Amino acid sequence: MTDAAPPTVGRKVADGAGLMIALRIAERLVGLASFSILARFLVPSDFGLLALATSVIAVVELFGQAGINLALIQRRSAGRAEYDTAWTIDVVVGAAVAAIVAASAASLAVLLNEPRVEHVLYWLAAASVVGGFQNIGIVDFQKSFQFGKEFRLRLSTRALKAIATIDFALAWRDYWALVAGYVAGTFVSVTLSYAMHPYRP
Image (cartoon, rainbow, N blue to C red):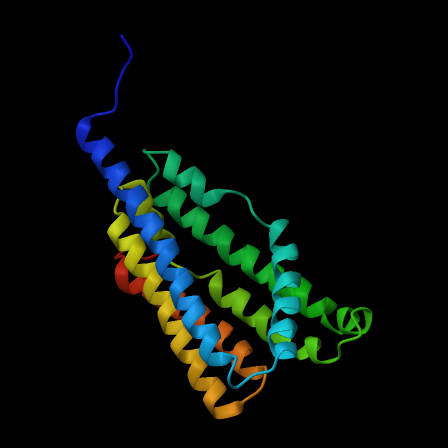
C-alpha cells in the first residue's frame, strides 16, 4: 500500500493550482490592458529600450540565484535563523547585482550602441537594491498553502505597477514612464510583502 497525502492537503494543492492558473490569466489581462493604454502614449522604441535594459538585469541575476526561497519552502523545520540568513543573502545578492549592472552600464551603452540605456540601467540597478529587501516571510504563503495571499500579493503588485506606469506615461509621454513604473513596481512589491506578512527580519 502506498502512502497518500491527507485529503485536506490534496484539496489545498488543487485549490492552489486553480488560483495560480487564475493568477496567470489575471496577470496577462492586466498586462494586456496596460500595454493597450501605454501604446497610445509611447512609441515602440520606448518598450524596446526597457526590454533591453531588463534583459541585462535578468542575465546578471541568473548568476545570483541560489534557490534560497525554494530551500525554505522544502524545509518544514526552518526557523528564524534560516529565514534571517535567507533574507540577508537576498539583500547581498540584490546589492551585488546592482553594483555589477551600474559598473557596466556605460560600457554596455557603447556596446549596444544605445546611449539612453546607460541611465536606465542605473535606475534598474537601484531597483535591484530595493528588491533585495523584500520580506522573506512571504515564502510561507506557498509553504503553508496560503495561495489566496500569494494571489492577492502578486496581482496587487501587478495592478498597482500598471496604474503607476500609466500615470507616468500620461505625464511624460516617453520611455522614462516605463522606467519609473518598473522602479515603482519594485517599491510596491517590497512594501506589500511587509504589509501582508508579520515576519520582520
